[in-house]
Length: 120
Image (cartoon, rainbow, N blue to C red; front, side, top):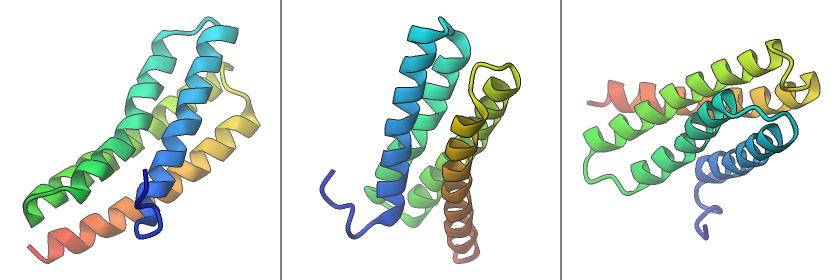
């Protein structure tokens, strides 16, 4: 993706999605865990996809809706990360790194969401 310079959220969410893909692949290959890892993969990559869609929004309402979905997906991703950690599929250091990244993205999305909802 070429427009990362002008959009730090897009870069953060894309980089996060790449990390999620790698973690999911490792969980499937090494731990033979398919259900939770697919849930994590779905929600963790959906954040960036919805951010990308928001950047192509045709209205303020459309933009806000996509950012809202991305925010909700970030919350879901934190849930799956916690579940994978507590069920001992995900090591603590991996969890902490991914959770920190996801939390940062969540806070950015929530801030954008608050601003866009207040302006409508």
